[in-house]
Length: 486
Image (tube, rainbow, N blue to C red; front, side, top):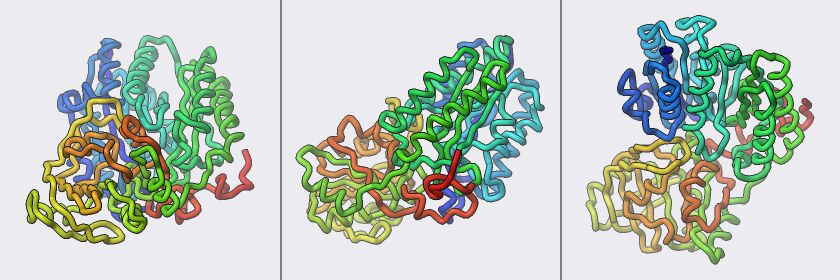
């Protein structure tokens, strides 16, 4: 029985945020070792859960090693990265010898000391396990894939949906491929192709064009005889690194040229559609006006510039203030504002409260409807694959304009309607829902939304790359440099 290790290190790092990500951001979100990893992730709708299920299916002796993730935020502190890398390497060393390693990475992780934090982690893992051990890696659809990641892994397998609803399946794929490798059925060789193109986040909805077109092409390429796996990394534009942009990976059975042909086919096909991956979103004013006129509600106003899933602060009030300015009633917004929560706790449930919250600051006057521990559970397949969630002590304020203002103590990406329903809120009864995301919240909100509007709001996760002060990205890169060629 082959001994196969399972490990994970996942963080989506926004280089344009000043505040760095600490060790506590990982340990307070999820950090597990050994058997605790199994109990935490066995039933999760996440790639780690898929790896565990697939390893059982393949008859491996499962060796749980180390897994941690943190909510998207700024680059990882140098000391924090060293501590996590050392802990993972130490646990891995104690687990040796292994027949193979299943590893969950994000692919858009940046540390202050290592821009290619995922590639560096693979380099250190190779120092422990050696160059020959099969290492099969899953990665996020928003990954920026480096040469080092491709060279130091046996096979890279990426998500195929955004919102990310296939994470568990990709973990199963990784385990099944490991089984084929260990039985000697395939000898993977891998190719990476990186055309000079950026795909804006707002254009990365895989159920709609243009993204759906290239994933149809992916399914065609994966059906080629001899192709073991193929993946598209649409990239994370808010990681200011050399690898930022779109990447295409293909894994073939012992045929380097076939792998290169498959990766280049995907890259060339996508390059021809490059103009369609750039787009302009409607303004704040016009989007709110559209919500005001809508006959069918609720209208989901996606606050693209304050996308929590991209690392934002979750405190922008730009859309809320525009709702007030245009006298649109019966809206809802969730803001991370621990100080505001404290004011509500002090006031108490059913009592009047006036509190200044958010950025830019806005004064909210209303009644404290609910105080809650902020814990909720999602049982359905949703973006991120998370089930148990904690947004910290949470307060709900109802205003005279029928607005519902939810204040949380911890940032929480809007990937689950339980974030609201656990507070006794009925989102389907609202006119406008301000949701701090881009594509990812769709899986949660589609059951209630009459319409989605992606709004060109300012912030650290702005959709337009022209507004981002890049220093390290490759050049030329389309669409910033229209003359880029491939």
